[in-house]
Length: 117
Image (cartoon, rainbow, N blue to C red):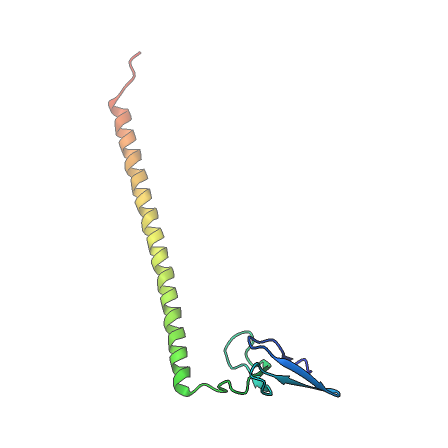
């Protein structure tokens, strides 16, 4: 088997050797075919053995929907990060205001009370 091909997949495969050739079969008992990963990931373009019953290509509408969903997800993740940052900044500002008020109150209180010895 060439190093360009991956034999790992979620489907169970049977390997049958005929002399110096090895045939790969899917879990349906059909001869597996060499396919190329089209998913945009670290495995993009990688070749592997897969079931011949698996849909070979996505239609253009499926690709549009998947890409649209991925863009929407990315936008939502960025919005969530921004909301978290705003909440943290708001909480920080609230705490700083409370510290300032507390310091002012303590200062005024210390001026009103004097120790008599």
